[in-house]
Image (tube, rainbow, N blue to C red; front, top):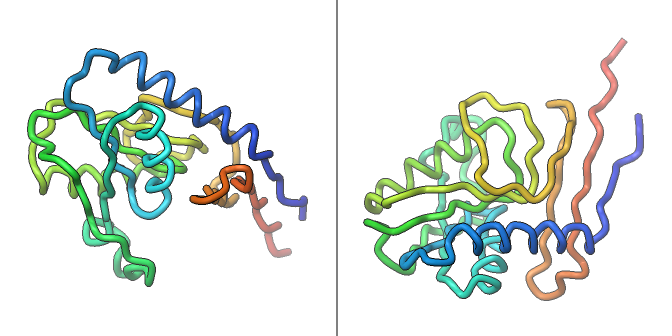
Length: 177
């Protein structure tokens, strides 16, 4: 089996900077912009982007909207939805670490619309790994990887020390003979 591939923290930081710049350029005149991190992977990314952009951020918990809740119970590190302002009429950027099948985004949209009707919803992701099962595309993408569906991408954004951020691509296991 091939060895896992890791990205240096500087490359991750550069991708986050590109995301912030792209969002900032598109929304320079947007009055009500909110970044909502999809729990759990998008929380720290949304917080960092919001700090760079000087806007509010919050958290969307999608646990009860997942279509696989019977196979993947609610995690122990449950983080409730926390939206700092009314989303009705606002521009909302959903933020997550990895975009894969699109099911997480669908669940996030369901949760978001339980809280109001935004004027516009966009998607910012750190890593697009392909393999969509639903017609979902990100408006902002930091990094793109072409990996098989059996590969796993593990993102860790250190809340206290960004130089310790890591992205690891774990290769798929070889098929049994």
